[in-house]
Image (cartoon, rainbow, N blue to C red; front, top):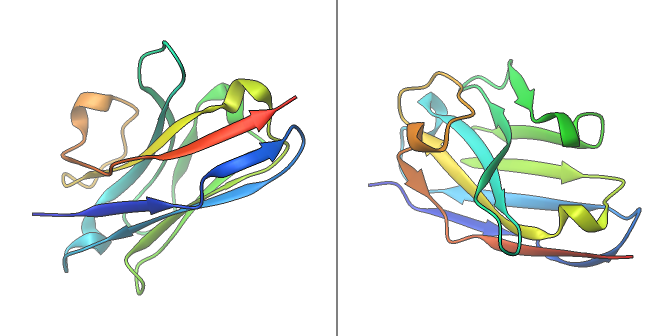
Length: 124
């Protein structure tokens, strides 16, 4: 069983920055691909970014490319999402997720464990 705990959400003005963190339990963290998803008001949960088990490969949805950066520290069992140049449309609950298969994916159903989410609100 893997437990994921997100933190770092909050209220920020448009153009501002936030860094989300996701702390994972368990010794196998370094073998998992880790993703970030978000769910805006009245919307389905959507893919944001993913990082491979080693951190060498990352992939982003088009709407956040050049603004968000995903990274991980396997020694700390933590994955991060640095969010810059935030826009009101980035407002959502952000979830981290672990894919035990190890290969990266942007498909929600490919992830095995989920955190409880952290809320990000971007004001205009």
